[in-house]
Length: 368
Ligand code: SF4
Image 1 (tube, rainbow, N blue to C red):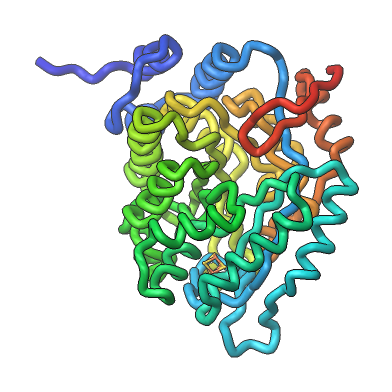
Image 2: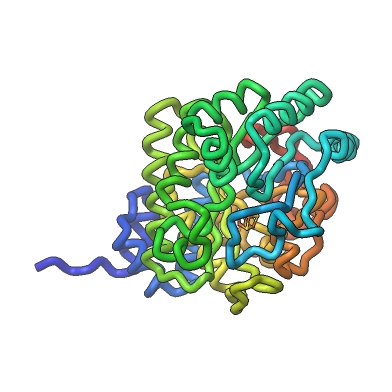
């Protein structure tokens, strides 16, 4: 007779390095006590990162446009193409923001839209070349799966060609924004025009095959069930296996945060802090082929992000300098953290801060 493993057995297996199946994960998320999830995730984090450091990135988030045709029900940032509040930054404005970042010791920009209906491929390649020619040391992680699929649609060319052109123009990485929940039941409800989970995975797969830097995200709390959250993680894990076997260039990291409902068309409630922490721990347990799990201070606040460092996270995210998307949806935590503030949070948690680059290479470590 087949008997279900107990939650303690499953946690023990995960800590020992065994892979948990989708069903194992669902059972754990439903039944494991929060303290047990935390302990197991922390044990795995300590095994993977025994050095006692927590990393962070000095970067700037630049939203080059807020014009968007996707109409996600959970988004308070975008404006429709005809809106007088729509904007598109000039290359010079973007350059000015990069100069400020360089003065801050920053190494990376995260350049994200809006999914603009009219910009053609040469807008993006010209922008990337403009940046790389003037600021050659800056890493450019830009756009997201839905943005690059939009360019392919406008240009009527394959996605692989779009990515190759962007890379040739200076793109270093394709961030994993817009994953939300990687299952079509929820996607069809919250963002029916954003593309299927398969399209998100395919864009990341192609980016990884080209050698672009990629990271994985998840936004939870839309009313999805535990199976959908678990599928999200196993789908990321499957792609990670595939990409690591192909050319050792998988996702650098995973980050999750809870849906921020203020000023959105969907409205609703924000998930409690404990649920966020459970999701961080759960992702550490399920994503056995991911080295890095990041805490998310812009959405959850510094205190909860710090707490996440005991629930499996080993990275404190980035300075951002400005953040316009989750803050538009009411994440009331400010839009920037200085390096000193990040150091303070990491030290308070008992770790040594370590400045990293976008590929998680360590640029410098500091005292605890
Ligand atoms: S989340 Fe992104 S794709 Fe969706 S409406 Fe907002 S800007 Fe557009």
